[in-house]
Length: 85
Image (cartoon, rainbow, N blue to C red):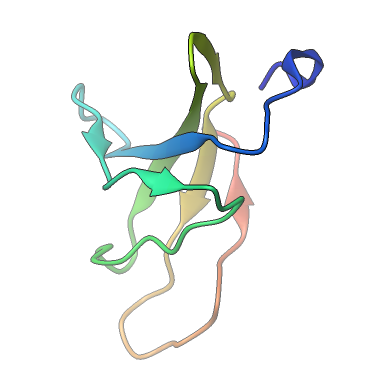
């Protein structure tokens, strides 16, 4: 994300995700004035690509894609290892 944009106090961000091999991105609900989000409903043993779009008035910034592998079912970890696709 372009860190030189200096977003203000009031901003919105969206988390976009898709499974490796899929074309279409899925957008989570917008998040207002928070610098984090929890992504739910991911399938186990799948690599997902994520990116964040931040919006503040007429300013927009998009992060680079980040690959994340989800653990197999039954392994309940807070997050998994980052994967470079």
